[in-house]
Length: 63
Image (cartoon, rainbow, N blue to C red; front, side):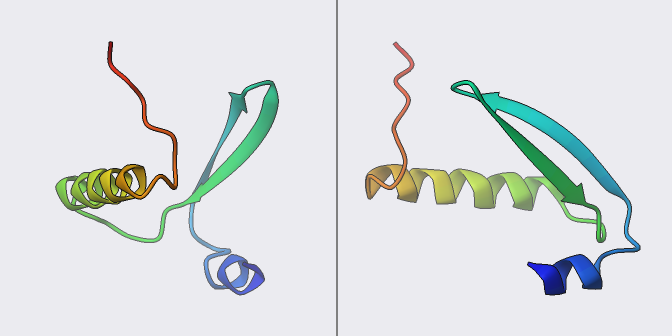
């Protein structure tokens, strides 16, 4: 992680804080270049489905 911090230290960042079940989590996003949002969302969706099928993350019911 420290190597990545050093590598991308001059890139613009954006910080968000999320509250998950009463625990504050700070997320720092580093913008290191342009990406196709369709590719990013497809990768995320595919990864989420695989992880749900393998029971690595909880499934969310829509009912």
